[in-house]
Structure formats: C-alpha cells, structure tokens
Amino acid sequence: MRLHVHLISDSTGETVTAVARAALSQFDDVAPIEHLWSFVRSDVQLDRVLRGVETVPGLVVYTLVSPHLRYRLEERCHELGVPCVAVLDPVMHVLTTMVGSAGRPKVGRQHAMSADYFGRIEAMNFAMRHDDGQFAEELSEADVVVVGVSRTSKTPTCVYLANRGIKAGNVPVVPGSPQLAVLERLEGPLVVGFTIRPDVLAQIRENRRRMMGLAGEDGGQFGRDYVDVERIREELVFARRLFARHGWPEIDVTRRSVEETAAAIIQLLQLRRHPELGIPPDELFAAMLVTDRHDNG
Image (cartoon, rainbow, N blue to C red):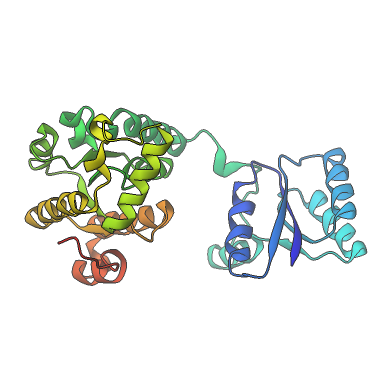
C-alpha cells in the first residue's frame, strides 16, 4: 500500500520525521511517500502546505507551536477527511500534569545554539581529528574510544555519537601498531571493541576494493589478504583476545545498524556514569552486545 505522509514542522522537521519513520517502519505492507514541509511559520506557508495535502491526501503528522496554525491545519484536515496527528501532544500533556505548568512554547527551541549545540560541534571536530588512530596521544580526552579491525563501521559510529554530543575517537586493530600501546594505557574513556562475522566482513571489504578499482592481486594494503576469509578470521581472533585481555566490552556489528550500535554504547556510558541504575554489566552485555556469536575465535 502506498501512503502519502505529510510531515509538517515550524522548524527543521527532524523530530516529526523521526517519529513518523519509527512508526511506519512497523508496517511491512506500507510504502510511504514522504512530503516534508519545514519552517512553516505563516498563513501563506501553511496555505501552500494545505494545497499539497489536498492534492495528494494521506496522513498528516505535525509539530507546530502556533495555536492559530495548528487550528487551521486541523480544521482543514477535518474538512478533507485526512487524519492529522500532533506527535508531541501526548508527551506535553503528561509533562504539564506532572510539572503543573504548560511550559513556554517556542519554535525550534531544541535546535537553538545552546551549550549542547556547541558541545555537538566540539564532539564532531574531535571525531574527525581522531579518526582511524590519528592523534592517539589525545584520546584520554575522549568519552568513548572505538576499537576494531578495518571496515567495522568505526568511523560512522563515532560521527553518530558526536551528533549526540559524545566525544568519540576510533583506532584500528593492527598488531604492533603504536596506537594500541597508547590504548592500553588509557584510563578515562570507555573503550569498546567491535567485531563482525568473517564472511560478512570479507564481502564488505571486497565491495570496497571494487569501488576503489582494485580487483587484482596487487592492491597494496587492499590486496588478496585483505579479503581472504581465513586471514580475516585471524584478525578477528587477535582483536577479540585484545578486548578480553583488557576487559573491554565487545559489540558484534554484523546485524546492527550504526544507530543500534551507538545506542548500545550510549547505554554502556550511562551505566558507567550512573551505576546506581543497578544493571549488572554482564547482564547488559549478554542482552545487548555479544548476541551474534560466530566462529572467529
């Protein structure tokens, strides 16, 4: 089933898009066609949106602060027989009851250039500077250090964490590399090891070789050994022994998206910062992390 989904916001639209996509992902038989209407802050802009809704009706999901614009949108959707959902209203109603006040609505408040915003910028700069083992001597300033063999999604995970304001660097596992010696002396940051199924990693690396135009034997560091499953298995055995020796939690990224992997790391950080939550680390690891057991040692 094809479904037109109108995502309407008076700011960037990130919130309404994320909520709608999370809900729609639960329906295998729905093929959503998204129409994002961002920065809707005037009657003229809303008129344009309403013409779009009338042309291709479907589902309207919105986050609007202005009572006037909300009323106009809901009234017109009612006239058109189009479902209209204010995604933040249930949370706002509960908060109003708990806090005893209605808050002070302000457009785009969560995107303001606050201390959190500048913290995210700083974290992003940190992730870029400390990618792939660069400036390893500065990693004591990190919140998280991700360790793993080549092509295990270390960089995108660090970038995702940076967007959450978490300073993350990553280091490749290469036997004898000076970066590993620096890692072994780290005391402050949370160090997390990434592993993956050998055959899956071989395919990922082969795809990278093809993208780089390296299909033959002499590909330098991207030669045949780079994609050989047995050689990869040896790399992973070395990595997992390193993780175990230092007691670093291990995440199998074989079937995990970057978002899921980052969420697991954030849980580990939360547990580290708030041990009063009382979740035993072993229980957390068993439930969230090393769930995709495979033959890599």
